[in-house]
Image (cartoon, rainbow, N blue to C red; front, side, top):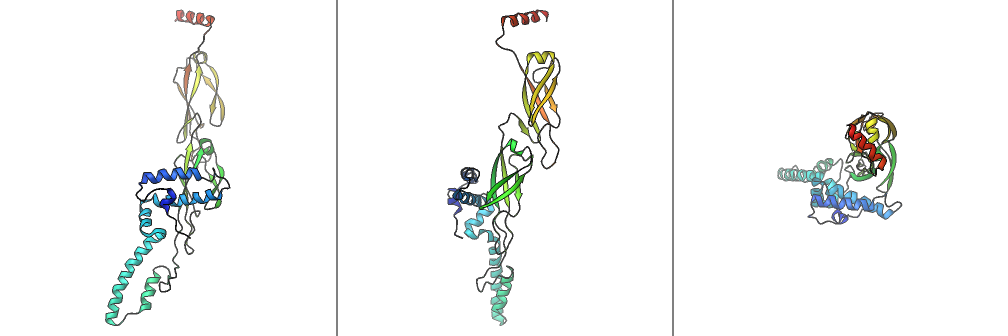
Length: 297
Protein backbone atom coordinates (compact mmCIF):
# COMPACT_ATOMS: atom_id res chain seq x y z
CA UNK A 1 0.00 0.00 0.00
CA UNK A 2 1.38 3.39 -0.96
CA UNK A 3 2.35 5.73 1.84
CA UNK A 4 -0.29 8.40 2.62
CA UNK A 5 0.81 11.75 4.00
CA UNK A 6 -1.86 12.44 6.61
CA UNK A 7 -0.90 16.09 6.85
CA UNK A 8 -1.58 16.54 3.14
CA UNK A 9 -4.85 14.63 3.45
CA UNK A 10 -6.14 17.19 5.98
CA UNK A 11 -4.46 20.07 4.18
CA UNK A 12 -2.48 21.22 7.22
CA UNK A 13 1.23 21.80 7.93
CA UNK A 14 3.25 19.57 10.25
CA UNK A 15 3.23 22.41 12.77
CA UNK A 16 -0.58 22.39 12.99
CA UNK A 17 -2.11 22.63 16.44
CA UNK A 18 -4.72 20.27 17.88
CA UNK A 19 -7.36 22.91 17.17
CA UNK A 20 -6.20 23.19 13.53
CA UNK A 21 -6.47 19.42 13.09
CA UNK A 22 -9.97 19.25 14.58
CA UNK A 23 -11.19 22.14 12.43
CA UNK A 24 -9.75 20.69 9.22
CA UNK A 25 -11.17 17.22 9.94
CA UNK A 26 -14.70 18.44 10.62
CA UNK A 27 -14.74 20.58 7.49
CA UNK A 28 -13.56 17.76 5.22
CA UNK A 29 -15.66 15.07 6.92
CA UNK A 30 -18.81 17.05 6.25
CA UNK A 31 -17.78 17.66 2.65
CA UNK A 32 -17.03 14.02 1.78
CA UNK A 33 -19.48 12.22 4.09
CA UNK A 34 -21.09 9.24 2.27
CA UNK A 35 -24.59 10.42 3.22
CA UNK A 36 -23.95 13.59 1.21
CA UNK A 37 -22.18 11.78 -1.62
CA UNK A 38 -24.18 8.60 -2.32
CA UNK A 39 -22.57 6.14 -4.75
CA UNK A 40 -19.51 8.39 -5.09
CA UNK A 41 -16.50 6.07 -4.83
CA UNK A 42 -14.03 8.94 -4.92
CA UNK A 43 -15.75 10.63 -1.99
CA UNK A 44 -15.83 7.30 -0.09
CA UNK A 45 -12.08 6.87 -0.54
CA UNK A 46 -11.43 10.45 0.49
CA UNK A 47 -13.66 10.08 3.55
CA UNK A 48 -11.72 6.99 4.60
CA UNK A 49 -8.38 8.78 4.26
CA UNK A 50 -9.69 11.76 6.25
CA UNK A 51 -10.77 9.50 9.12
CA UNK A 52 -7.45 7.66 9.11
CA UNK A 53 -5.55 10.94 9.15
CA UNK A 54 -7.64 12.30 12.01
CA UNK A 55 -7.26 9.10 14.01
CA UNK A 56 -3.49 9.46 13.92
CA UNK A 57 -2.93 13.21 14.10
CA UNK A 58 -5.61 14.06 16.68
CA UNK A 59 -3.96 11.74 19.19
CA UNK A 60 -0.75 13.28 20.56
CA UNK A 61 0.91 9.91 21.18
CA UNK A 62 -0.04 8.49 17.78
CA UNK A 63 1.06 11.68 16.06
CA UNK A 64 4.50 11.46 17.69
CA UNK A 65 4.85 7.88 16.51
CA UNK A 66 3.73 8.85 13.00
CA UNK A 67 6.23 11.72 12.82
CA UNK A 68 8.99 9.31 13.84
CA UNK A 69 8.09 6.11 11.99
CA UNK A 70 5.81 7.29 9.16
CA UNK A 71 3.64 4.54 7.72
CA UNK A 72 4.98 2.07 10.31
CA UNK A 73 3.78 4.16 13.28
CA UNK A 74 1.51 1.39 14.56
CA UNK A 75 4.53 -0.82 15.13
CA UNK A 76 6.45 1.89 17.00
CA UNK A 77 6.42 0.09 20.34
CA UNK A 78 7.60 -3.12 18.74
CA UNK A 79 10.42 -1.26 17.00
CA UNK A 80 11.47 0.38 20.24
CA UNK A 81 11.45 -2.97 22.01
CA UNK A 82 13.40 -4.49 19.15
CA UNK A 83 15.97 -1.73 19.36
CA UNK A 84 16.45 -2.31 23.07
CA UNK A 85 16.61 -6.05 22.58
CA UNK A 86 19.11 -5.60 19.77
CA UNK A 87 21.33 -3.51 21.98
CA UNK A 88 21.19 -6.13 24.70
CA UNK A 89 21.90 -8.91 22.24
CA UNK A 90 24.76 -6.91 20.74
CA UNK A 91 26.35 -6.70 24.14
CA UNK A 92 25.76 -10.40 24.64
CA UNK A 93 27.24 -11.19 21.21
CA UNK A 94 30.35 -9.17 22.03
CA UNK A 95 30.75 -11.09 25.26
CA UNK A 96 30.16 -14.44 23.55
CA UNK A 97 32.68 -13.67 20.84
CA UNK A 98 35.24 -12.82 23.46
CA UNK A 99 34.49 -16.05 25.30
CA UNK A 100 34.16 -18.13 22.12
CA UNK A 101 30.54 -19.16 22.83
CA UNK A 102 28.68 -16.92 20.35
CA UNK A 103 26.15 -18.39 17.91
CA UNK A 104 24.57 -16.23 15.18
CA UNK A 105 21.55 -18.54 15.13
CA UNK A 106 21.06 -18.09 18.88
CA UNK A 107 20.88 -14.35 18.36
CA UNK A 108 18.34 -14.63 15.53
CA UNK A 109 16.18 -17.07 17.48
CA UNK A 110 15.99 -14.85 20.55
CA UNK A 111 15.40 -11.71 18.52
CA UNK A 112 12.81 -13.32 16.28
CA UNK A 113 10.84 -14.98 19.09
CA UNK A 114 10.10 -11.60 20.53
CA UNK A 115 7.84 -11.01 17.49
CA UNK A 116 6.11 -14.38 17.53
CA UNK A 117 8.47 -16.16 15.15
CA UNK A 118 9.69 -13.24 13.03
CA UNK A 119 12.74 -14.24 10.99
CA UNK A 120 14.94 -11.16 10.86
CA UNK A 121 17.69 -12.99 8.99
CA UNK A 122 15.41 -13.29 5.95
CA UNK A 123 13.38 -10.11 6.49
CA UNK A 124 10.11 -12.06 6.86
CA UNK A 125 7.62 -10.53 9.24
CA UNK A 126 5.04 -12.69 10.99
CA UNK A 127 4.28 -10.53 14.03
CA UNK A 128 0.58 -9.86 14.45
CA UNK A 129 -0.73 -6.37 15.06
CA UNK A 130 -4.22 -4.99 15.61
CA UNK A 131 -5.57 -2.89 12.75
CA UNK A 132 -6.02 0.85 12.99
CA UNK A 133 -9.08 2.21 14.79
CA UNK A 134 -11.32 4.53 12.74
CA UNK A 135 -13.23 7.58 13.96
CA UNK A 136 -16.33 8.97 12.27
CA UNK A 137 -18.93 11.61 13.04
CA UNK A 138 -22.60 10.89 12.35
CA UNK A 139 -24.96 13.85 12.15
CA UNK A 140 -28.57 13.22 13.14
CA UNK A 141 -31.69 15.15 14.06
CA UNK A 142 -33.14 14.86 17.56
CA UNK A 143 -36.16 13.00 16.18
CA UNK A 144 -33.79 10.36 14.74
CA UNK A 145 -32.75 9.19 18.21
CA UNK A 146 -36.19 9.19 19.85
CA UNK A 147 -36.48 5.49 19.06
CA UNK A 148 -34.15 2.67 17.96
CA UNK A 149 -33.51 2.66 14.25
CA UNK A 150 -31.15 1.05 11.78
CA UNK A 151 -28.84 2.90 9.44
CA UNK A 152 -26.29 1.87 6.83
CA UNK A 153 -22.85 3.48 7.01
CA UNK A 154 -20.06 3.23 4.45
CA UNK A 155 -16.68 2.65 6.11
CA UNK A 156 -13.52 1.55 4.32
CA UNK A 157 -15.55 0.93 1.16
CA UNK A 158 -17.84 -1.44 3.05
CA UNK A 159 -21.48 -0.97 4.04
CA UNK A 160 -22.15 -1.51 7.73
CA UNK A 161 -25.69 -1.91 9.04
CA UNK A 162 -25.90 -0.63 12.61
CA UNK A 163 -28.67 -0.06 15.13
CA UNK A 164 -28.67 3.38 16.72
CA UNK A 165 -30.10 3.08 20.25
CA UNK A 166 -32.82 5.47 21.36
CA UNK A 167 -31.66 8.14 23.78
CA UNK A 168 -28.16 8.65 22.33
CA UNK A 169 -26.84 12.05 23.40
CA UNK A 170 -25.05 14.75 21.44
CA UNK A 171 -21.30 14.12 21.54
CA UNK A 172 -21.70 10.51 22.69
CA UNK A 173 -19.38 7.93 21.12
CA UNK A 174 -20.12 4.24 20.54
CA UNK A 175 -17.73 1.50 19.45
CA UNK A 176 -18.41 -0.92 16.59
CA UNK A 177 -15.97 -3.74 17.21
CA UNK A 178 -13.91 -5.08 14.33
CA UNK A 179 -14.93 -2.49 11.73
CA UNK A 180 -11.71 -0.49 11.75
CA UNK A 181 -8.55 -1.10 9.72
CA UNK A 182 -7.53 -4.61 8.74
CA UNK A 183 -5.14 -6.38 11.11
CA UNK A 184 -1.53 -7.02 10.13
CA UNK A 185 -0.38 -10.61 9.56
CA UNK A 186 -3.65 -12.08 10.78
CA UNK A 187 -3.99 -9.74 13.75
CA UNK A 188 -7.46 -8.53 14.84
CA UNK A 189 -9.15 -5.72 12.98
CA UNK A 190 -9.33 -2.30 14.54
CA UNK A 191 -12.58 -0.84 15.85
CA UNK A 192 -14.86 1.89 14.56
CA UNK A 193 -15.73 4.74 16.91
CA UNK A 194 -18.80 6.77 15.95
CA UNK A 195 -19.42 10.15 17.57
CA UNK A 196 -22.95 11.54 17.31
CA UNK A 197 -23.60 15.16 16.41
CA UNK A 198 -27.30 15.64 17.17
CA UNK A 199 -29.02 18.75 15.89
CA UNK A 200 -32.23 19.96 17.50
CA UNK A 201 -34.65 21.87 15.29
CA UNK A 202 -37.69 21.02 17.41
CA UNK A 203 -39.42 23.36 19.86
CA UNK A 204 -38.29 21.14 22.73
CA UNK A 205 -35.12 21.71 24.70
CA UNK A 206 -33.41 18.51 25.78
CA UNK A 207 -31.50 18.03 29.01
CA UNK A 208 -30.43 14.38 29.17
CA UNK A 209 -33.75 12.47 29.51
CA UNK A 210 -35.98 15.47 30.20
CA UNK A 211 -37.62 17.82 27.72
CA UNK A 212 -38.68 21.44 28.20
CA UNK A 213 -41.07 23.58 26.16
CA UNK A 214 -43.23 26.70 26.37
CA UNK A 215 -46.96 26.71 25.65
CA UNK A 216 -49.01 29.81 24.87
CA UNK A 217 -52.04 30.29 27.10
CA UNK A 218 -54.81 32.77 26.21
CA UNK A 219 -56.07 35.16 28.84
CA UNK A 220 -59.60 33.76 29.03
CA UNK A 221 -58.49 30.14 29.60
CA UNK A 222 -55.93 31.31 32.12
CA UNK A 223 -58.59 33.20 34.10
CA UNK A 224 -61.51 30.81 33.81
CA UNK A 225 -59.75 27.47 33.33
CA UNK A 226 -60.48 24.87 30.67
CA UNK A 227 -58.91 22.23 28.44
CA UNK A 228 -55.93 22.76 26.19
CA UNK A 229 -54.31 20.46 23.60
CA UNK A 230 -50.51 20.61 23.79
CA UNK A 231 -47.74 18.95 21.80
CA UNK A 232 -45.42 16.34 23.25
CA UNK A 233 -42.50 14.86 21.33
CA UNK A 234 -44.60 11.98 20.04
CA UNK A 235 -48.11 13.41 19.81
CA UNK A 236 -50.67 15.62 21.49
CA UNK A 237 -52.21 15.38 24.95
CA UNK A 238 -55.09 17.27 26.58
CA UNK A 239 -54.31 19.26 29.70
CA UNK A 240 -56.78 20.69 32.18
CA UNK A 241 -55.95 24.31 32.99
CA UNK A 242 -56.82 25.47 36.50
CA UNK A 243 -58.69 28.76 36.87
CA UNK A 244 -56.49 31.82 37.57
CA UNK A 245 -53.35 30.17 36.17
CA UNK A 246 -50.50 32.67 36.29
CA UNK A 247 -47.95 33.50 33.61
CA UNK A 248 -44.82 31.31 33.98
CA UNK A 249 -46.63 28.47 35.71
CA UNK A 250 -44.81 25.16 35.18
CA UNK A 251 -46.32 21.69 35.00
CA UNK A 252 -44.65 18.30 34.69
CA UNK A 253 -45.87 15.51 32.42
CA UNK A 254 -44.30 12.38 33.86
CA UNK A 255 -42.89 9.93 31.33
CA UNK A 256 -43.41 12.27 28.38
CA UNK A 257 -39.76 13.21 28.02
CA UNK A 258 -36.95 11.53 26.06
CA UNK A 259 -36.19 7.78 26.18
CA UNK A 260 -33.45 6.74 28.58
CA UNK A 261 -30.39 5.31 26.84
CA UNK A 262 -30.48 1.51 26.73
CA UNK A 263 -33.34 1.38 29.26
CA UNK A 264 -36.22 0.05 27.23
CA UNK A 265 -39.60 1.52 28.08
CA UNK A 266 -38.19 4.19 30.42
CA UNK A 267 -38.57 7.90 29.69
CA UNK A 268 -37.74 11.21 31.29
CA UNK A 269 -40.31 13.91 31.96
CA UNK A 270 -41.71 16.83 29.95
CA UNK A 271 -41.78 20.23 31.66
CA UNK A 272 -44.21 22.81 30.27
CA UNK A 273 -44.11 26.52 31.04
CA UNK A 274 -47.25 28.53 30.32
CA UNK A 275 -46.74 31.86 28.58
CA UNK A 276 -49.76 34.12 28.98
CA UNK A 277 -50.82 35.89 25.79
CA UNK A 278 -52.88 39.03 26.21
CA UNK A 279 -55.46 39.77 23.50
CA UNK A 280 -54.72 42.45 20.89
CA UNK A 281 -56.83 44.47 18.43
CA UNK A 282 -59.73 44.68 20.85
CA UNK A 283 -63.14 45.77 19.56
CA UNK A 284 -64.98 48.64 21.18
CA UNK A 285 -67.32 46.13 22.82
CA UNK A 286 -64.39 44.20 24.32
CA UNK A 287 -62.78 47.40 25.58
CA UNK A 288 -66.01 48.36 27.28
CA UNK A 289 -66.25 44.96 28.98
CA UNK A 290 -62.68 45.21 30.24
CA UNK A 291 -63.44 48.66 31.66
CA UNK A 292 -66.39 47.19 33.51
CA UNK A 293 -64.17 44.46 34.93
CA UNK A 294 -61.65 47.08 35.95
CA UNK A 295 -64.29 48.96 37.89
CA UNK A 296 -65.40 45.77 39.61
CA UNK A 297 -61.81 45.09 40.75
